Length: 229
Image (cartoon, rainbow, N blue to C red; front, top):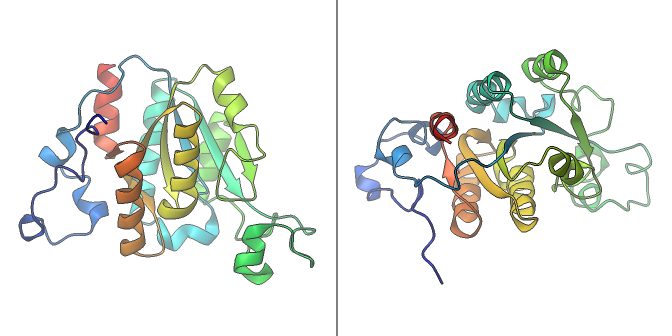
């Protein structure tokens, strides 16, 4: 088996030499950590997937939001495709008996009801969607591709690579990114533009994804790499 491409995590120095900051901070440093990734398949048509940036997840994305907005602005400026997802459940799905597995796991009171305040996109994201008239894909499970038009939309735009950001790192971002990989899209997960319930979960999600699926990259690296492709 060929060695995986060197990435943010495989190039990390020993823990004692790392700055005493969370992963979401040092991923964004302008250092060898974010400059050691190889050029990957230049010239690919690339889309940004912004996963579930909804009001309920606001506390998890305070650090990631500025980087997500930076990516949105960059993809807008360079006329690359942007697609947003929005997680939610119908009244029927929230009513016993529960057929949706997420509702079964979390319970109806801890699930996001379509049309609720929790379901709404965060204001800055909603503004970006409205300004660009970008598509928003509704979904009711972790995987943004399952039972949605996401794959068809990407193929219609002849997309070959997706850049994934949003929330939660280790749930919907990771699952959607893995699903993209399994469907043949080159997939980047943007570590400093994702958020989760805890730093431990965030880091675990990034490490698991980069081991077997694709590189974990930083916002500024994405911009630099795409400028050169």
